[in-house]
Amino acid sequence: MSDVKVRSVQAVSTLSLALAGVLLLPGCSTASSFEAELEDISSKSRTFNLPSSVGGDMAWDELLIVCPYAEPKGDVHPVLAAAASEVDADSSDDLQWLIFRSNEDVSTLELSRIDFDFCSRSFSAEETFKPEAQWEMIEDDGASVIVPAE
View 1 (cartoon, rainbow, N blue to C red):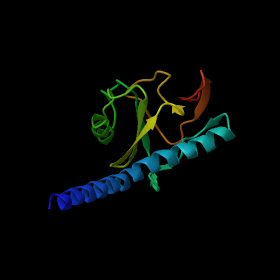
View 2: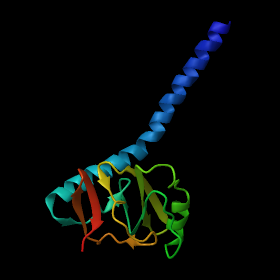
View 3: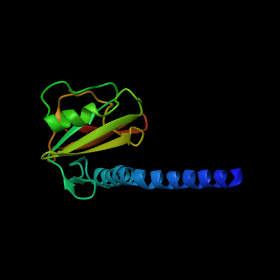
View 4: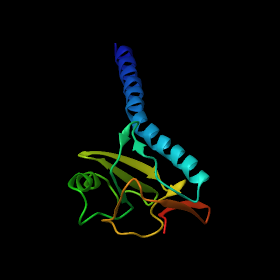
C-alpha cells in the first residue's frame, strides 16, 4: 500500500515539474527572443533602436531599466513604478530588468548582464526611454555594454 503512495507522489512530483517547466518557458523565450533580436540589430549598425516589440506582439511606448540595488523614486509612469516595485533588485548583481510599457500594460524582462549589460554605465533611476531612442554597444572587458547613443 505504501508503494502505491510513493508512486503517486512521484507521479505528482513529475507532473508538477513538467507544469512548472511549461509555465516558465514563455518568460524565458521572451527574454531569449529579445536578446537574439538585440544581437542581430546591434551587429548591423553602430547605433540602433531596441526591438520594437516584446512578448510576441506588444509594441512598447516607454522603457524603464532597473539595475541591481536601484529603485525608481520619481517621475515614472505609475504602471512602470508598480512593475518596478515587483522586481527584487537586491537579489543579484548579475541581473537587470527591462520594463516595457504600452499604455497601461507592462512586460518585464529579467535579463542576465553577461551577454548584454544595460547597467554598467550610470543613468538616473527615473530615466525612461522611448522606442526611437538610439543605443550603441560598447565592448568593455569582454562584456557587451548597451548605452544610450550620444
